[in-house]
Image 1: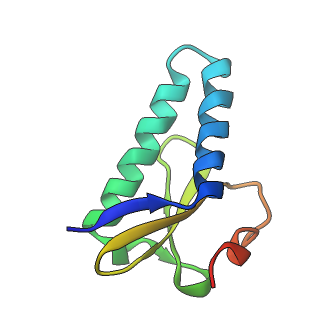
Image 2 (image 1 turned 90 degrees about the vertical axis):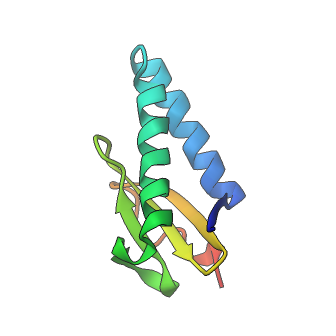
Image 3 (image 1 turned 90 degrees about the horizontal axis):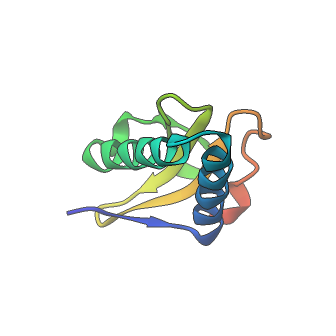
Length: 98
């Protein structure tokens, strides 16, 4: 079974966005976190479904929010590289992986 692991910077991005959405309205932070969890679960179940990206990564859209989950999958884990807002410079996270 494949497990997920977040790089520390990806986890920080997730927490920052959850905090932002929590301040924006009741329940929005929880909805965002659940949407990210759903995107990660779908990536675990079908890692090749995400759109191909830089350095062997793939991305899945976080439904209902302007974010992508950027990940790299192997036989044993799904490494979450970034929780990337659509307005951020594409590939800003590429130096996080080799």
